[in-house]
Amino acid sequence: MKSPFASLLASPRAILVRSTLATGLLAMSARAQASLEWSATQPDNSGDEFTQMLAVGPDGSVYLAQAIPGNTPNNLDVRLVKHTDAGAFAWLAEWDTYGFNDAVTAMLTAPNGELFVAGYDRRETAIGHINHDATLRKFSPGGTQQWFAASQGVGGTAVSFRALARLSNGAVIGAGSKGAGGHLARFSNSGALEWQRTLTGGGFGGTWVTDVALLPDDSIVACGQRGSSFNGALTVWRYDAAGNELWRSTLDELVPQQSHGASLCITPSGRIAVGGRRLVSPSANDMALAQFDPADGSLDWKLYVSANSGPSGMDEIRKVAAAPDGVIWCAGRRFDTQSDMDTVILRVDGGGALLSLETWAGGATSFDQPQALHIGSAGQAWVSVMGGVANRDIAVLQFDSAGELVSEDVFDLGGDDIGVVAAAGPGERLTIAGSTNASGDYDALALRIDLGAAPSTYCTAKLNSLGCAPRLSFNGAPSASATSGFDVVCANMRNQKSGLWIYSLTGPDAAPFQGGFLCTAAPRRRTPATTSGGAASGDDCSGMHVLDFNAFAHGLLGGAPAPELLVSGTSVHTQVWARDPGAPEDSALSAGLRFETAP
Image (cartoon, rainbow, N blue to C red; front, top):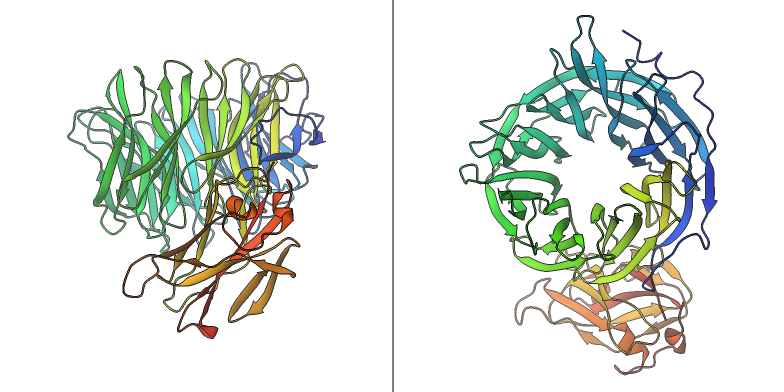
């Protein structure tokens, strides 16, 4: 058997890395709030290269795992490329683990910049058995492979990791499948395989794990499907860090339907939310979302959403994420007889009630599928979408805290541009990776998207006298011409208290003030006072200060708005000051919210 360290190609084939700073490269919509910072491709004329996985380091560096033509016929090898935060090429590594097909199935960056790469590598034994191993490599930020480990398949078994998580002591959890069962494995920070577990099913349909997360005590939560009497059911498992199963919860196991969990998240209250789908028949299926108690796996609630307008077996929730206010965002897809496949965004409250459902159809007769979901600092959700069939484009959608679409940016490099994976990075930026054939054959592609033109929060809020932290968000879009339609919102405030918005046109600040911070630079301006509302009696944090900044800018709410608010491109920094009896200086101060006026 070849040494996995020796399989790191000593002299990777020469490639040309093209990094382009953005300007005039892409076609965008009029509702643009995301801009291209840089793009990079790696053409090498050896055939088609496709990005499989992406990771972003704590310093903004970008790691791309690519499938490339192998050195032996009909085999694929792996190329790992690092770009700096500015898009410059840093280094690459290539490997062919056992001399057969190799693929990357998951990647994870640690806070210290170390990179973990999970593979799915074919291995053949001396007696002709074909196995697939779940492999794991650790790289330093400088590109040195520090160790290689594997959870091996035997007797013709395939083992793979679909997701990774890192424990507080540096150990790594791999989650995926082993044969017809699910699979969990733990590797030490030095690469030793410490334990592995096979998650068996209870009937038909097979068992596998699709996503994994960690609770504060380092216990492991995984979701996927478990075999059942009706061809598989959505299942959640919880294991402790030592590999002992604590509980397993299966949704509607005895109902005649097939279901699975595709993505999970931990809510601010510590509950486990899982999104996926259920299939009642080949022509009838629903999006599925359920929430579970982490203590014992008991079901809090379940929600099935029928969003399709025709027969399909493809409707599902693909990504879930929890906002700081406890709202669960879901990005999914649905079948549409008019445009084939649409992207659907759902918002669900902590009690399981559907708050909103928004559909983005993209272009006519296009397959639009969400690839990533990211919660922004101002309460919005960003969704990256792969759209089209033969001539695909990459779209970035922004939804405000009420679930309304407020911006859409479509990136077209002039060919078939495939956005496969996306990841958020520091500084309100998003990286999207995939492939493009704009220069001929398919080359690996990375795009760095700057989200800085969209509303964002900064600075630090002052805890009020009841221990609540003010929470900022927005609804709508800032506009120099519109006379309404952009609400700035500060929730989690004392009920029935007066307050106002302080704003600045000269930038941010963080000056100590009344036990908190002034987050706006001098000279500062103010809006008319507002009342927080909320509970009519008693003392709680049900209050909310809301101001339509578009209406205020046009003089419709009184006060003396700055004329610059009616100029497109004006950058505004604002925060709430409010009364709070019992707090230092009897006042409340929110963090800061920055936005830029559009035309």
